[in-house]
Length: 237
Image (cartoon, rainbow, N blue to C red):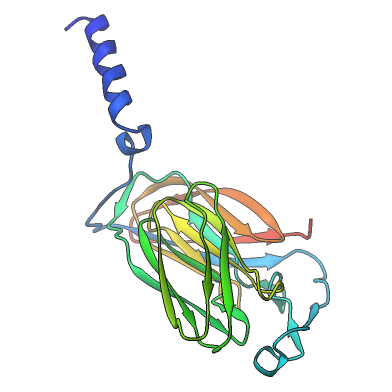
């Protein structure tokens, strides 16, 4: 087969199969994987925690709330997402059903991470009207009213994306959905800790994302059955 025929076959293939499908992540069994673990820190003195004044539905929502957009405790950053950006083959990943609660007029959890293709179940535990509004770009945006009698609604998130969500009824309600294209992601806990397990040996680009502190990228080499420890230091933009 000469090069003209090969080129024609390639062009035809690309016309019917998206490029992302040709180079999609491949999952399987991992026997000699390593671990990437560490902590996300705030570089410098963290700003004082902000208070949000509540002006609506105070009987359910309360009168004030702590601003969840930046939570730093003892220098550790909560709700940052750490993930590998360039891995093409590793442990198996599959869509799941995950839950996002609207409780006390807050999104619980504030940052929710899951594999692309998963189904998001949005709960209304407050017994009042909420309205969940996504600001998606890769996925189809959604904007659903959820009155007190509708305890659960479901939305499928098909594509990888970081999605901001808000409530049009309570304008302080703000959260994030992290839809991942591979299983190597972790949301930091109250101690700023993260852990990625069963990572095939190799060198990867690992990134941390935070809604107010931005992103930071590192290159990490993983050895078989060993733990690689790293620290990310983020600063206020």
